[in-house]
Amino acid sequence: MYFPITAGVFRKHVGDVKAVDNVSFTIYEGETLGLVGESGCGKSTCGRAILRLYEPTAGAVRIDSKDVLAADADTLREMRPKMQMVFQDPQASLNPRMTVAAIIGEPLDEHTSLSKKDKLARIYELMDQVGLNRDFANRYPHEFSGGQRQRIGIARALALNPKFIVCDEPIAALDVSIQAQVVNLLEELQDRLGLTYLFISHDLSMVRHIADRVAVMYLGQIIELAPRDPLYVEPLHPYTQALLSAVPEPDPEAEKTRRRIILKGDVPSPANPPKGCNFCTRCPKVMEICRQTEPTFHEVQPGRFVACHLYQETAD
Ligand code: SF4
Ligand code: MG
Image (cartoon, rainbow, N blue to C red; front, side):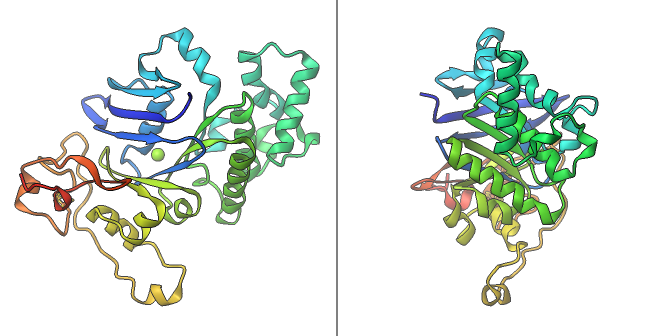
């Protein structure tokens, strides 16, 4: 059984800073879990730690009942093809000196022993799948638009038939006009190939479009996790409420009554997080207990998790 993937309590230290702390969630087969939050909150670190592109200092990520974080090099090599990443900046993640065919073929070279002919056939198949013209196989990344470059990155990620893909801000570097095309492509590929996504983004409207469930991060922690609609309609955590209050409503009637919650102050440094609740220095609903005791992340309604004293069963 490959799924669910469970990730729990890993700590990633950057120098003395805990970039990610007490993060815990599960990803189910075939779903898209959106991971949102402002830049610097630890979203990418979290995604990379799951694929072990970073070495977290503690915790467990279970994929295929194997602990990714404890896996030795051989086991990891075996698992690698099944979990891939699509990066934010296709410009930076594609080698400018390699042709498209070489870029897409690289994982095939590393993990398969396909003949030259079969490899080329697979490269063409992947180019078709992501909507790239086969005639461009011998061109270089700079000859493509940003959207096409992201298609190259997606084709490379698909080369080894992965089950799980971490999409780290896959559209953030693209023109608004082509963002939807790339998101639609990702959705199409998910349906056709039965993929599971962790979709990392600060674009809450896009996440509402693509995600089945959404996790919200603040200062290295997941503070709320819920199915998409309940989260967007009735966010529980004061931070989620503030984040969503900044997103324009598609319905003009609802937009008229939207009340923006402006947060005071800046996000504290992860090197020096506040005592108690991480959000207590900025929370409009802060209480005495919040400055003393860290709230636990727990299930408050079926499938809805939140870390906030407003929702603790007992006021201990
Ligand atoms: Fe605000 Fe307190 Fe809840 Fe933290 S625990 S989000 S400070 S109400
Ligand atoms: Mg990031």
